[in-house]
Image (tube, rainbow, N blue to C red; front, side, top):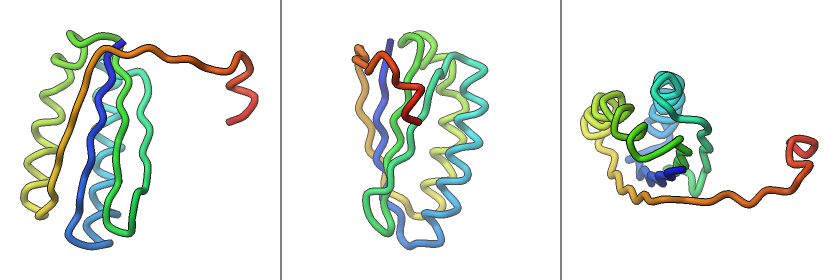
Length: 100
């Protein structure tokens, strides 16, 4: 599994709301290319982060074309983006689905 963590710093609350919606739309498109889960986390009034869980790095590279379009939107709206990624392992409670 390959994990990507993206931090997005928006210029204001309105931009954040708009970019979060757009991020979800991009995520749905990326799921066709191997994205298996996406978690959005509000970290302040104007900032959020997105954790993307990919089948593999190869799948991430395949789905990256959708992200490039989104990245252009981020730049146009004045957002600052930073991202890190790497091979990952998940440790989950055996009854995880009972708690969501």
